[in-house]
Length: 289
Image 1 (cartoon, helix red, strand yellow):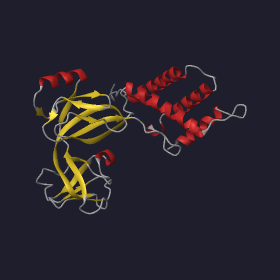
Image 2 (cartoon, helix red, strand yellow):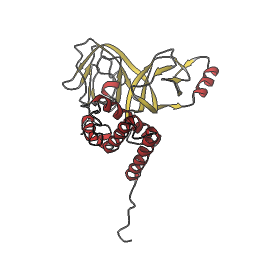
Image 3 (cartoon, one colour):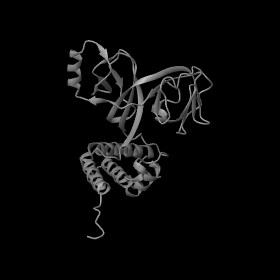
Image 4 (cartoon, helix red, strand yellow):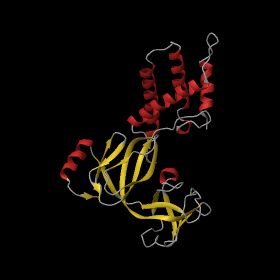
């Protein structure tokens, strides 16, 4: 895959030095990141499958009604609530064999089963936010083995972590006003049934009557590019991003005006063309037609 440096190097052919003044690499990297932000926004407006869709697990503490939005979250697709299986302070995460061990001996008793999807929070290196969700390939009372080769060593029997099991109880999205109206009608605590955005938080209708695990599926905006990092979207939009970078460079020299609106229109048209091509399903004809 191409790196940001490759795209910037290519753009320099259209941004040659003028009167001995050339663009600093760091400046061009800032411009390139601005174009990526616009591209993310256009893809989101089209609900495109090109967006970086990911899942994380999070904990809703008993007595609370909100959590912070996931890292680089651009929009939430769905939230699912689950009971906490258990919290541990004596876990051993082992990369060799991809296992999680406990001396407490309660994995099977607490309902962990083969083919189940689990998540982890409260861990130093093995949070779902960092390594993703895990699928169980084998389980005993003291040992979980997972299919994914992502477990990070954390020492012997001294790691903490809360384990969640994925369930199919969805928390339904509502407007912020609806959530606050429901809160006025609710006097007790309970499990969350509805959620809404509120600034950088996700808020719920009920105060949690116990600790709950939340599986959150969301669209994640692109990480800020560095010179040596791969370009986003598997190089699909590299030429478009290069053109946007050139436009920002020329605007800085006064060769272009209203670059933001022109850039958004250009990206919108290019993405729409790709989306039509990507979504097209050819009609199948019968052999005897």
